[in-house]
Picture 1: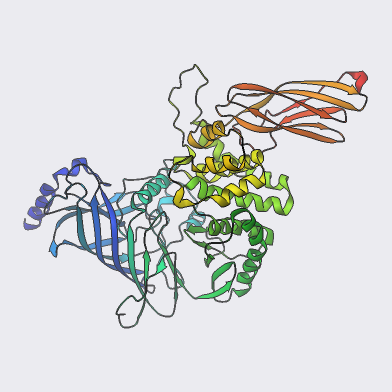
Picture 2: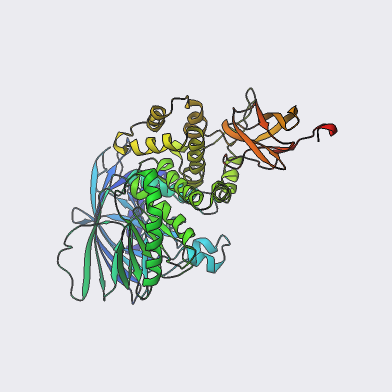
Length: 572
């Protein structure tokens, strides 16, 4: 009876739960001591959180979530226990498919912009868990390659929000079965907490080496007997997912790479270091000198999915073709030279760097093939975003993700990669290189900042392009050859007039190619949304085919871009 009354008291004190605002509070400060016991897969945590009420109303019910395999031990405010209700909240924000959610009732409501400090302790096991993936049909082996986070004797790897809630968070439920809902929830959480600070004291037994994507923070203080401790901080957290690994690591520092590899894998590490040395000069030519080293941390399973955690790249160091490794490293080398708070620039340019590296190795066709391999997810994502033609109603209205505010990686990675390639084709290598190298993240106060930098290097109106591709999402273009007219000038020379129609909602400058048995000729043509444009292309041979788009412009449909050219029989 006494226990029932206690629960009833908690529930009565939690009347606002009917309209619970899980994101009412921003976590402005973490100060945590984490003990990891690999032999038992156990984690113990204690410390303090500072939360700020970022709503316009007083709030009394902050929410704290940790992985569902962990349990809350105590929650206090100003040294006094507070009422709280704990339950399992289904959400794929954690690899277990749920979180242990504590809903607190504060002694006094926190006013708007007011803060509250909460002392916390929690503990439990963190085994590898693929529940969230297998329940939506992902094969178990593939799921294990993706959700590799765990505490174990052989390897401990812990990614934070979006993988394992080993530190407290608070988000609404997100499901992997609902498109990009989980990814968008993670991005929203990171954006709210990007200026927050996290201080950690990480402790573990044995001789394993700790590697994290945080900054070393000096001495962790007194170390418990039998444990090794390290102080790590994220100040601010930014858009990084706090991550740490424990294992039998060795170090190889061979600029431009700083590699932490598993004992016995030195030959793999040296292969990657060699590939980095070869790729670095070309990437520096485009993006400038490196501002930091490129840090690689080996994942011990050759099939584990890589993870980019801020300035640290966690990846298997598998042996392979050196050119492929150079393409992978081009991404990290670009990040080491160029940083931007805008995802479409920061990630888009890193993916653009990979296409550039592929072109450097094997030519333009190889680079376009590399980009084409990534096109289909973008086409699928844009299907629901196509706006109606001018003068026609859109039902339902377009829901696009403009690059300047995109939270889905298919936009700020893949679409942005194509945008940078298109800009390069339009303005040339020199102008784009100079604009990129002139970029200063601390001066980027508005979306048009880079557009102005580019305009200083290339005196041409690009407002329409940025409006169609960066500031708004109007889907993808859809080009086709509407008409083609060949005309013989002299016995060996022809002029081919090609009319291109764009039935898509976004304009682009696109290459038009006329092919003959002996070769081809091409010109570039600007075709705005729902319009036609005409280009004349001379060719010193009998023309046979007209093609719009060589793959450098992403289209909703690439199957209608070719037209056969018929010439009079006596001209053949």
